Length: 220
Image (tube, rainbow, N blue to C red):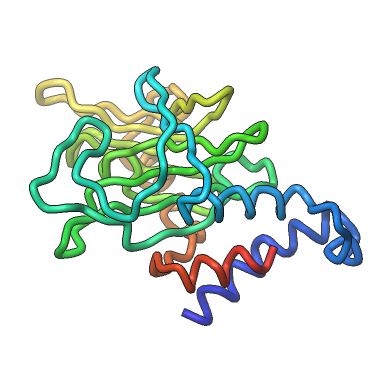
């Protein structure tokens, strides 16, 4: 746990030092990172609502650690958020928070991605297959099956998120097509490209509990 917290601090405190002098941390006016961190902590602590956005529909919700209704799904037994990570998916020097939703046995079902924009915290749901793997550089692995998957980048704008594919393998009958940046490639070229993506550093996942959340966001 301590190593995970140190890794997160190294990632984001470096951004703070690039944006403002170190002495600015003691000033009354919060830095952009501090503002974002405070907004996330208020949402996760159920002190302020966030804007849940899915398929063109938005709603003001209060965050709950356990849910029985989620993005059109209903659960007989509550599912809960057990892990979270911080990463910068769109390279704007401000972190997003990704929380993993799982069942009582710990099997992942999906994610909620929190993003701060224009004074609002938006929450975007992803089923597990839509975000099976993320890197610290913003690469996202999505899958519809063993022979129908790929990597993409998320693009955010005015409370919306879209996935722009970077590479993909798709099956049409008995034919498998491989593409990188929209251009057809061989299986060998595709495999080499995706192996490079898999080797990139990934966010550190931490247990989602009040103590850990407070420790993480208190550092900003």
